[in-house]
Image 1 (cartoon, rainbow, N blue to C red):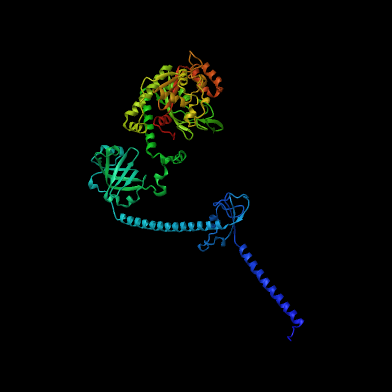
Image 2 (cartoon, one colour):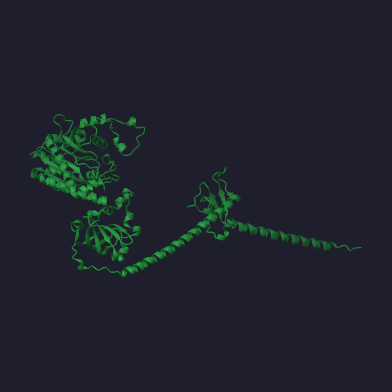
Length: 614
């Protein structure tokens, strides 16, 4: 008979089993807590496919990423975690197409696989970029080494300014075509530069002309040749030769260089002159770089023609014994009035920059007779005006103004004078080889105006515009606005309208000859203009219009009668007191007189098809 365990032994065994079970349970709890703690230690990144931003997101709930890959990349993970990206972070996604868009969900299996593939592609691109970077670095080092060796070799080459080859007198570039066969010395800027294996071709300029130079032999092996850039200044000695048949060069000649040196090196690379201004550079950038744009061929040509045109006007005035005077630029009265005056404080009093010197020119008629001035005028334009709709991107604030006043004349005398001046100035410009070349280069279709100019009364012009369906809104069409659905808006011109320039130009182009439009309404003209005896509501005024250009001159006879002038002040609401000195011209020996004005820079730009006033 087996022996049964005592009650105390059973009790002890039960206690031991219970304690063992508690120990195991505690151990399992610790393991679970450890796993939870490890899991909660991972960063949580939020990805919102619709509202997130890879560029600005941080992964926080209020600043989510847009893509999983960007979220993963933000961790800067090591490559060994690429296969298990969820071991680096917890990704919570809000899908763009989910029914409950506000719900954050854990990364799905398919999304995790897609992320892993994206990571693989990213790593490959990184490796390629690093390899390309290393290759570029190697190529850069090799290029730098080659350049260093070239410079070392170039330093050993020395050019000698050998006087035994013949005397080389200092020569301006415009003189070069007359010195074929001679050895000369020139200085200038490198305008264009083209290098070949055995030759360098340079076009240099000094302001007077352009000359082509050819460098060979040691001339292209010296250190200066390696550092040569466009707009650098150089000194060159060489022999002038005619260009070979079938080839072209400025002036029909070229200089074979035997010695030269770099005087002032212009920067290359990112600061190179060629990269500063391009054909598509906007007007604002061009304005900021105006000091550099002036070196360009078009700007140079315009300045040259402008200079020659001013000289031609002076010659024509001199031949007519019209005297040049210099009126003030700071004035206390205005000719036209309006909101475009530049106002400033002049020792406690209001003053303005002049818009016209006409009134001041009239004051010297009794002492000098016929007079003119070429002077800067100023206009504080607030926006694009109809007068500049085709040609000005930014406001025209300063311009060169040519004005003349003639005494003891009648209206027909004024018209004849203006007509002859325009034709003679153009003839002078076309007779000058320099200005003629520039004019025909910039405007190949330019044709000199022929006399007599057509006389067109303002009222007949209104009739022409309406008969030929040139509407009052032509200026809007000129500004490039869409014309669709605007037929009902079109309005015919009426007597009293200030005809828009676009309409004037279209009419002039259709007629195809110079026009003197005369007798404008008094209400759209200045207070000082003389009225027609036969039609008091109209004036003895004129605008000269040229095909392809538009208005070039505006003028009128001036009021000579004191009472009529005072009535003009009153009609326009102009106080007469500040104009006492102008009124006195009618008080102390009045006479018939008239004048005109031409904005030379602006009109020259139009004639030459230059669209930007600056």
